[in-house]
Length: 137
Length: 137
DNA sequence: GTAATCTCTCTAGCGGCTATAGCTTCAAGG
DNA sequence: CCTTGAAGCTATAGCCGCTAGAGAGATTAC
Image: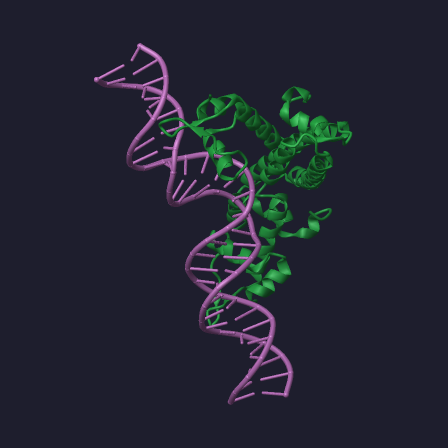
């Protein structure tokens, strides 16, 4: 049996975050010690590792809830898990594209500024005047 | 003089967002009509355009506040504006890199899954077992 | 036994909005 | 001039995924 601090150290998920996950129904309320402290089994520790890994990959709490449900039913088809992961991947790709557009615009703006006074500053001028931009963002 | 709805339409910033910006001190409280409705000048309309543009480029409210202050002092050196923009650019580049790492990991995971049952699902297995990952994320 | 460290619950806050409720004002048409 | 419907007002609460803090009690090491 592990205390909340122990699973926090082992998984890298902070203590208040673990309690938050419990509140959100991501993890079940664990057993308690006589003094009302949470006590986790090895299985619960591993499940938290699963959650941490999924969060690190950027999956939402809702998506993780679904994945955990699937994980609990090994005989079900995994199309749903694939769908969740694929959707998330598409989402990430969109964000990358958007950020890359911003990157190119911003780097152009920053490069064009020859650090004089504000009145000639290309950074400020570009913000004031959309026509100085190359494309939509 | 423009009503809040008019500047909302012209700038693409939603009405409640404009009121929120006022509350946050991004824009000054404008004049009011006799019936206590906000009335904006052309200058205020343009300032909101500046803000919208900066938000579209991903700048934070705090950064925009600073830029607006600079914008109001055309004779000051613009090094500060450059610093804000460059920092933001660095920030964007970091996010892109991080997302690209996620993208490559997730696409590998999704590709490896041959859509059988959950128990063999590579998506689920990869989440459970960090050693199936190629690098840190 | 005692001191240090955890852990407990509860509440509030972050950023950047968005939504809702219940009201008042404005502008256009008859 | 009056009515109607759109637009505006304030105030409050909610979104996500935590994080921070207060003030209390539990556990552990010595």
